[in-house]
Image (tube, rainbow, N blue to C red; front, side):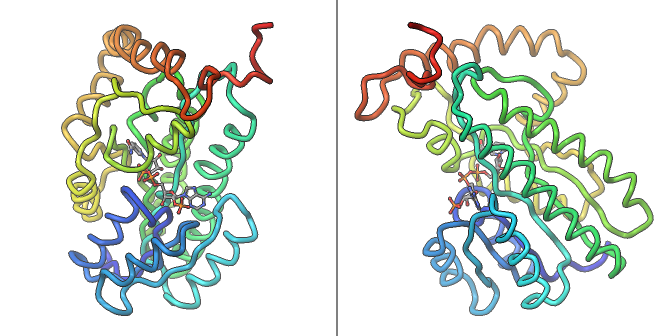
Length: 285
Ligand SMILES: NC(=O)c1ccc[n+]([C@@H]2O[C@H](COP(=O)([O-])OP(=O)(O)OC[C@H]3O[C@@H](n4cnc5c(N)ncnc54)[C@H](OP(=O)(O)O)[C@@H]3O)[C@@H](O)[C@H]2O)c1
């Protein structure tokens, strides 16, 4: 496996992406170009790590013009990009029938379009240079269904299918494309997916970010294509693969209750309407 020295990591201002930057710099000695919209968070991260090891560029990955700028900046400041981590992603807890079009478009633009765009740029760059790695941060939801997360789940299924397919095309180029598929992980993901709404107390806590990321970083030396970083995520993938009927029963028994019923009854912060059910889109007269 060629030595990895320069990386571009998206979604580096919080959660999994921020911890990835920390571990790539501290444990792997890499230099990382970190990106997200919140430039102040990126600057704090750069301050926290050894000088010159974290370069930053803030912007919105849903904007194709920013993606072009970001990639050319990466080639300029890093020279050679050995590792691209497409980590930035967003969810939106809502029943599909009532989901805001803007929320749907936002998930497709970030979780899919941005990922495809940067992957294409990186694959070409790495192929010409004879090697590199493209790591997609996908999800266990790329293997299964989840109520109140239908579009998000669709994007992660797409990422897994894309990764498995592209892998064949990149065979014998030296470029490895793979996806890490964590389960629920501590981060800002849930708060963002809930938006203005009250916390859903019945959703279980996530696994520690540090542990999930450590397992993903270790797999940079491995050969997995779809990688479950913890035993919990591995167990879910095993169930989805070998006992889909049992997993379906478990989701129907537990997740529908915790996601859909609680979502319907949760009170939005500072508002009186039913969360996830926009008055404009509600079918109730
Ligand atoms: N947490 C979980 O339970 C879990 C489980 C499985 C998979 N994942 C996946 O893990 C990845 C990271 O999520 P996380 O859990 O670490 O959530 P997070 O803490 O909310 O981090 C999301 C990151 O994406 C960035 N981002 C959001 N919208 C963006 C945009 N339009 N342009 C550029 N950057 C943007 C955010 O930064 P700014 O807001 O500063 O732009 C932030 O740095 C996602 O792909 C998610 O689907 C998460």
